Length: 170
Image 1 (tube, rainbow, N blue to C red):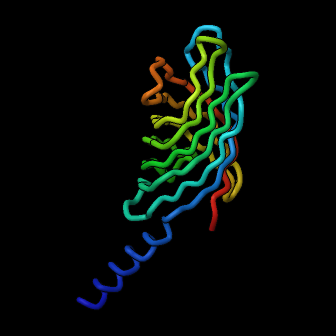
Image 2 (cartoon, rainbow, N blue to C red):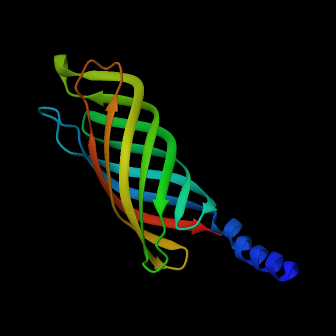
């Protein structure tokens, strides 16, 4: 009886290591800097996430990304890293997630005396959802982030929307 119990436990726990997931993604993003005389800014976001497979139905890991937003004289180039938590309801092809990211952002917004230009600490709180469209390929249906910058003296809090493609690596 003990042998059957050990084999059964081993078979149930074996697939947990296979739940680890790494994905690379590219999205098109649009950001409202919430500043007067600064229009919406557009550009790509590229990144990589890795989730560890310790908890069924829940992915816990990290995300690292680069964001290149801007048009005209306004631009923000960012490099961010932080924790990621996602839900994996196996009956549905959707995977909602949340992230808390921090890093550096090179900011150049506004014109003349209203110009803010500096490299500063940046943070973003992110929520989104991926939908599986093909094996190993997801559509990042929507991603919303709210962010901010330290030490700029401006009330700069970009709100960003994005959509794109995720390729999950084997």
